[in-house]
Length: 163
Image 1 (cartoon, rainbow, N blue to C red):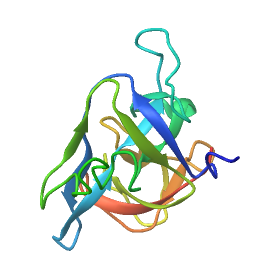
Image 2: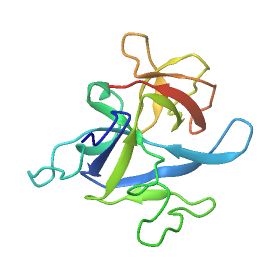
Image 3: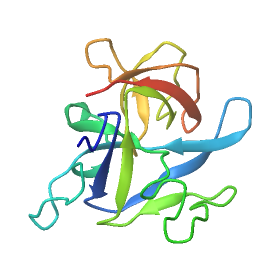
Image 4: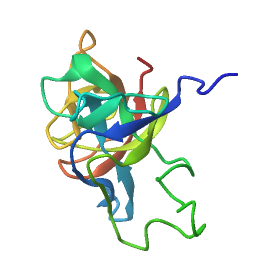
């Protein structure tokens, strides 16, 4: 039985990830959901993650070789719907942080909503910036490319490559 298509897997937070799912403005002023980049992390207690994916932490500049994907927008286990109540995890304008040990979906290989860590121009190749964001990279180091332009701190859509 297949547990993942490779585009969506699960992961467990090795440390707290503040505002892993957040609401950020676009260049047009609308506020929409954006998701932080994740990288591989060491197990905080030496155990397996016990999910169909790795231990992860927030992405940071210079850590592109450890890139896993971005926090997902799936309905399980955490991103949009609380499985116990079937209520949305986030209310209007809210953000979602993940505590050490929390499980989340991780997405890649698609057009996804991410955060600009520096000014981005449509077509720029992307690499990791600090705080789970993305910045301009080169073709050789790129882990995706920008589908639209954005200023630092804004939400934009990007094609994020499969690993």
